[in-house]
Length: 196
Image (cartoon, rainbow, N blue to C red; front, side):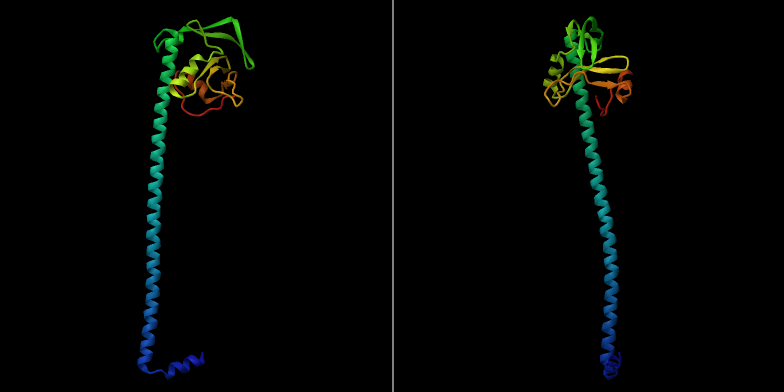
C-alpha cells in the first residue's frame, strides 16, 4: 500500500488527472454496462414471456380446432351409424329404435351374461358384426351396440377387437359410469370412459 502511495506522490499533476479521469470513466462505463445489462435482461424476459404466451395461445387454438374437428367427425360418424341402423330397420333415422325386439326364447351367452337375442327388424344383432363393420368401412371409426340390463350395458356387437383379434363383446359399461345416465337421458356423451 505504501508503494502505491509513493507512486502516486511521484506522479505529475497531469498524470494524476488522467488517472482519476480514466478511473471515473471506467466506473461510469461499469455502471452504464450494469444498467444496460439489467435493461436488456428485463427486455429479453418480457419478450420471452410474450413469445411464450403467443406459443401457448397457438397451442390452445390448435387444441380447440382439433377438438372441434374431432367433434364434427364424431357427429358425422354417429349420423352414419344411425343411417345404417335405420336402413337395416327399413325405417327413418328417428324411428329405427322402435324396430328393436328381444327374444327370450333364443338367449345368447355373451361374456359372463346370458341375454335375450336382440333383433333389428327381424335381423339378429346379438353377436352379429355386419352393421358395426359397415360403420367401420364407411367411417373408419369404431362402433358398438350395447344391450341394456338393469345395472349395466353389455356389449353385444362391436368392431372393436381385443389384442388376440377376437371381438370385444361381453365387456360392460357399469351404471356408475358417467356415460350411463347421460346416454339414458337421450343425450350424446363426449369424453373418454373405460369399458370393462
